[in-house]
Amino acid sequence: MFKYISEILGKFTQGQRITALLIVLFSIVLITLGPSLIQENDCKDVYSELEKQRGDILRLNGEIIQVQTECTNERISREREIAQILNLIEREILDIQEEAKAVSSTRELRVIDSDSAVSPPQRLPAAIPVMPNFDNVMENIHYLQKMCGETPKSN
Image (cartoon, helix red, strand yellow):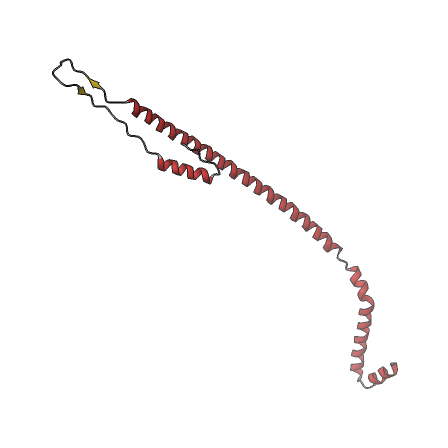
């Protein structure tokens, strides 16, 4: 086999022989030293960086979850406050309606007898209060209560 290599190299010019010799020498060095270079350039630093990034990701995920929880708790708190205010408004409207009913039922037209038997009894004009209509307001309050997750109270 070496006999054929020497014959092949004999046919090359001096410059071609040197180039071929350099290619063979470079290939031998690469084959010999390649595995040791690869083992020295181990991925330990990559693995340590990867572990650091995993720790950072876990920490950031924890922070995101904490912030989301706080935001949700604040939102629920605000909805409860709104629901309480709506309940107060609803109670006040119901109280006003009850007072208006009470006032309209106690005020009746009163007949006053006159002193003389000849003249017919006279009626005094009485103010008849108009019942306030809060149906539209109550519907809106009930709608807002449903949006806040509260159950509207029936009249």
